[in-house]
Amino acid sequence: MRVLNNVLVTGGSGFIGTNFIRFLFNREQGVSGDGFQDKAPEAEFSGRVINLDSLSYAGNPANLSDIEAEYGGKRYFFIKGGIGDSGLLDSLFGDYGVDTVVHFAAESHVDRSILGPRVFIETNVLGTFNLLEAARKHWKDRSETRFHQISTDEVYGSLEESGAFTEDTAYAPRSPYSASKAAGDHLVYSYFHTYGLPVTLSNCSNNYGPFQFPEKFIPLMIQNILEGKALPVYGDGKNIRDWVHVYDHNRAVYLVLTCGKTGEKYNIGGENEWENRTLLDAIIKTVSQKAGREEASVRAAITYVKDRPGHDRRYAINCGKIKRELGWKRIMNFEAGLEQTVDWYLANQNWVKTIQSGEYLRWIENNYGSR
Ligand code: NAD
Ligand code: TDX
Image (cartoon, rainbow, N blue to C red):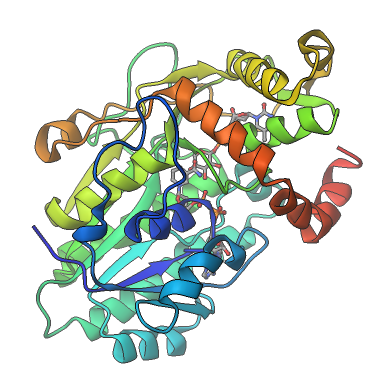
């Protein structure tokens, strides 16, 4: 089992990166039901985290203020900067003796990639390239290093009613977002084969949980219900996604980092497929109950809108390999996880309001009018 010492987490102030760092420092939000009952890795992780984040619209350093207060300057170091800055990467690898990279930083929203793809290429392709180059340079004479690429199921393309993506499914990305992630993944592999860089990759399905930016389906719907706004469903609402709690995703990433084999990729998923319209029903039920809204009037706000161009119909993940080879299994039950997520958004309306009052509001107004 690999020990993590000096871990460079890119994009640690976004949704999944925040949860990953909180996971390393054992700062999970509790949940009733069957979640969060296995031992967090605090005892095992005694290393340092260097969080490199450019604080794009999606990055929020307040997510980690408690970690900063307790570990800042000792075991936690926040660096505001971009993965496009090769000079900065050079000094971070040198100054902190980085031995592990967990590469979350990305432009992550499909709709934005349709409206403005350039930054997706800059961050997800060129940024990944810069990071690989820094690792190649600094790890030439080092052993026990690891570069982990966080990828997505979207690189595999779109499924019809049956089947599931395996690690052998050929990449067939269909949006600028997924194409940029696929390009990043190919570069990561090429550094393994060409330079022997010790890499691993994981391809995960849709995450949900605390700290997700409210442009994504689940938090957007929770928030719009609370604010009495329309609930925009793309197309016929029958597109299918597989949902996994961010905690289960991060447990899997930790396993791959410590026990995974270099040059290998691992699929991660919740084995939990939902049609968007059915998932929205479940969200409506949970939020209405918890926030004291009348379910029928919330339901009346469902609005079928123009479909997302190139909208992938269905994703499904076969995660047999990580279960079999690394002993991972999902521990969050979806109903309990959704409840925990709704509770978190209800308890953190200030977090949402702060986001809504800034750049995000201007972006929504420019692209969607008053939605
Ligand atoms: P997010 O948009 O919430 O966070 C991305 C973070 O990256 C932000 O903190 C942002 O400030 C930072 N960032 C952006 N550009 C940067 C740059 N040039 N340099 C440094 N930092 C930069 O995204 P997320 O949902 O947390 O996704 C994290 C990773 O997981 C991404 O690589 C994404 O492709 C992948 N992924 C996400 C999901 C999902 O459902 N959210 C599923 C599978 C894979
Ligand atoms: O308002 C909406 N209405 C709607 O019907 C939004 C925002 C989405 N949708 C649909 C589109 C998708 O079928 O809901 C589904 C989920 O949409 P998103 O939350 O935008 O996620 P998705 O496009 O599936 O991508 C997510 O999962 C894979 C993440 O954003 C990616 O970063 C990750 O790689």
